[in-house]
Length: 441
Image (cartoon, rainbow, N blue to C red):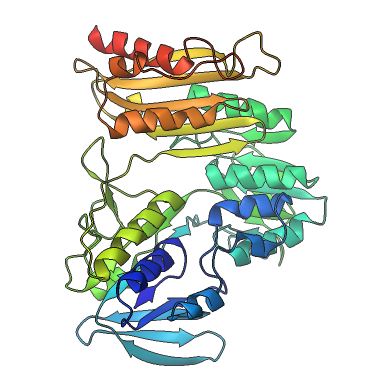
């Protein structure tokens, strides 16, 4: 049985089916959609992607062809470990029933952080997690005018801010942080993102907390410490947390991150109970400690590992780096591993230049920060901000981190060169060399 019908859950179901044709596989998903690209939702809201169904990877009919019983609009209410059963509420049929299990995969994902402030339940306050959320926001955005306030400066918040700006809205982003994307970028690099947003007439207010959301029945304004901002719609973009209430209530142990504790096979400490995706911990390959990243890449991989093992295979999940990438207006952003502020004994090296040879038409600015361990020179992380053609360079750093390379190793790596793609010394080389020099001091 699978609880959760998106990336991790349905990857696991598919892999288990490929290995054991005789398995009875049932998956329950509380929303009306399953196996879809949550990462594509802001682009649907912006109108870049149409129709909504293009974000669906596999339909329930496709899973039915695989003999996987996927039931949407079914919410699991309780996990009963003693009787090896779950209680399910059919949200359309308005009935509750129980189903037993031999093997259980918990893939409940993550949920948006909702601050405890006045007015949070007013009509017009939205989040963006499911396709239902995306459809609701697109219907609003398509009106083409009004005032939108995004609360929070994380990935989803900034992508939705751009989406509403593209649709003709007046947009304000309010974040309590010193800059945006605080979990991804150092504040000085985040300032580049803010500048790019302001170039698109998106107002960004940093270092300010939203104290209340005002209105009678519908949202009318957002109250901050310093001012009141008119709002026809409010979007919560303050990040997400693992959705673990079902597991916790059942007595399934959580880890130090607050997510479900699993081993490298995605097994919990309860026999026959597994977990994968945003609700589960993973081992960070740089720190060696548990981590919890809400990324589609991690969800699909951990779901695959769980499904193979449930199906009788033996595969280990090798860990995560937290590699992430996005585009906010014209600024590309990426990071992997750790930042200098994450631990004692880390140092960084910066490199600034252009994405191509400086004389090449259309050369875009780029800035790279590489982080290394003092003394050993081991590469520990990297951040990138810049124009078109910048951010996918992060994959070179991610591969180097995955392989345990030093900054000096990467500084001499045989990377490709031609004027339309980089300078003869790519900024990857230069940032890595400067990090290596800093680590050797």
